[in-house]
Image (tube, rainbow, N blue to C red):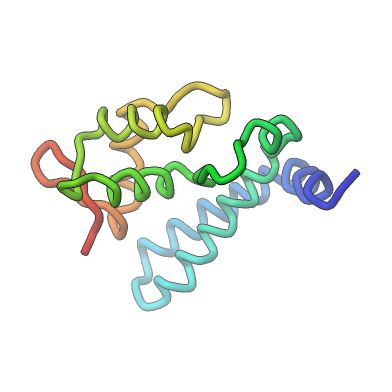
Length: 139
């Protein structure tokens, strides 16, 4: 077993604990704005650990050399919105572009849907904002 498989195995075994820490960190972020940067980094780290638990040999073999694959849905959303000419898109368009570019898939392998995009915008208001029916990055 290689390094990545070891990390993935540990993350998978401790998934419930990691998710619990992630939820506590998100609540703490909402309650305490002063330590926001530190908490945001903790949230990003915990999300990556959860995703490492889902990491398989197939995931690595599937990715073509030179392609950029997002680790999280909000990372994929950021890539798509940054690349859009207007700097903003509708949720359905973001989901379609993520699927088209193979940036991210849900844990069960399904493509991302517009409702997940809307949920992520609500949960990551420090990254995204709604302008009418459009979603853009926070300045």
